[in-house]
Length: 157
Image (cartoon, rainbow, N blue to C red; front, side, top):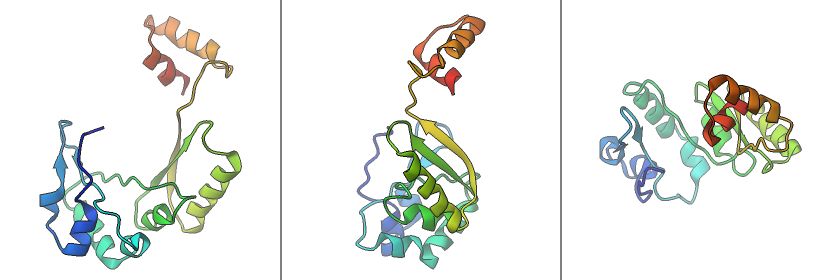
């Protein structure tokens, strides 16, 4: 999305004692900076649960008002569960028609089991066509006087 290389990043800072400012990317979006993960280490869960990682996040809090950490799905690896233990909150994201309901329930339970503060959920990739939401799409389009694919999707959610 931002055309940023993932070759260097967080792992370089944590494992090779590199300076954060050298690896953070400024974007065209005002006040949005991105730090990629860098090379995948042989033991990611050890690094993520380390004191060094926790200290790094606390140091970032001094420079940023909001820190968003994108993790792999909780059901695949333990990364999200580990990170959620020192995050202020997490957003549970589920892809429509991509995640079985039971797997979503188990994933949510895993986050609750580690004490994660789930502050919300996002259902993405939801298609309104044929799902009984057409009335609402029509209503919002009619009321706003504008039509458009993005407006329909936003109004349906």
